Length: 113
Length: 115
Image (cartoon, rainbow over all chains, first blue to last red; front, side, top):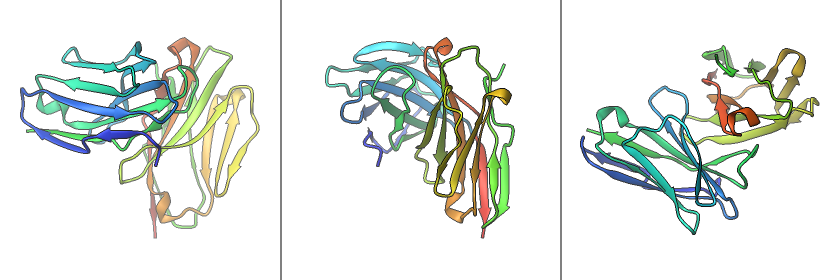
């Protein structure tokens, strides 16, 4: 158990809908990262927050947004969902914003039908 | 250009064989860190090791060992006496100032250990 929690574990929704994925980092970690992993694909970095501030953006679509709250938990919002958004979404956390190992949550498996 | 290359897409060996997973990286920074992660069939990503660019000593942890060679920009991972439970996708990653410290991931190597 990495100490990072993600909810929900599974999510099935229809095209065009909007969903929110939630992540709680390990105790004491200030950074939260979001990744997308499609079937048989590598990890695609989406976005990084450090202590409430956005630090870096990766291949995140405009339909996706995220935030990190004062209690350091983070939410990833996916809207106008398309079939291609079906994937495993991981959250990871680390103590600082540089050179740390990242600890991953169990992931949320999103299925868009 | 790929900054982290894992050229072996899939490796299949019989249990008890030794196996080495290759990782070649590219960076202009003098300070950087390298990582290995394991993703078993259950899906979670498990951190295995972090190594900084100034420490070229080989690391051994049980049946796992890592060989870091700056001269060839490689950070290879060897599993000795492999077991079925080692079956997983293994990812190598790089963190450097030039990429704002974000982890740059290799494509992963799928390791299959046959009983």
